[in-house]
Amino acid sequence: MKLLKNKTALITGASRGIGKGIAIEFANQGANIAFTFNASVEAAKELEKELESFGIKAKGYQSNAADFDAAQELAKNVLEEFGSIDILINNAGITKDNLLMRISEEDFDKVIEVNLKSVFNLTKAVIRPMIKNRAGSIINMSSVVGIKGNAGQANYAASKAGILGFTKSIALELGSRNIRCNAIAPGFIETEMTEKLDQNTVNEWRTAIPLKRGGAPKDIADACVFLASDMSSYITGQTLSVDGGMST
Image (tube, rainbow, N blue to C red; front, side, top):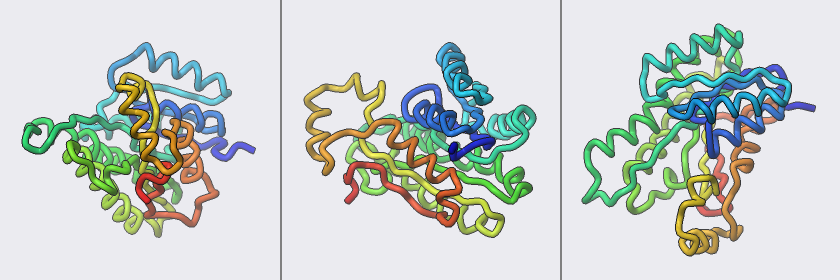
């Protein structure tokens, strides 16, 4: 039984890493997929083909989630193409790490804009159609760093902590319309990006995690399937930590 059959999911930042893992697992569970990407048209086309191989409809949109008008336009285009938006996954994000002494105002503002304002932009863009349908699941990608903080990541931690407050507020506002809003806080997830890191550093991180390993994109994708499906129909306003015990 496919848990997301005939649902349409809009996933931001899905051309690689965690976003790509979510898109693939959602397609495997029967969802039609609209996804956004920033730069790589070729990677987006390849992902479209991979998703379509599951027998679902898939389309990539080059769109900047941090731009309010672009988010409105995206939602309009997805509705025209797919007929509904049942699930929104706010996954787009960047890092510009530095100690506070060295962070520029520009690097602080950019991370807040891409990571936090994008969540406002896309959520605002999809709530009218969701209210009309009297159904919807919104999943916001936070981070263990948004819960615990991290030296050298004040901008990133602030953006990811902000997502948690936003998530709880939206859950309270939209619960009466049968729209649920939850957050996922990933820990150390091993993706293409982490492959470029120093192996000794990675091994130190793994050792510090109670489960003694990094997570995979599928670990996050499985949690998203749960929160997007009817299995979690009585869960809203919550943060699900998928971090191997890092935040314990």
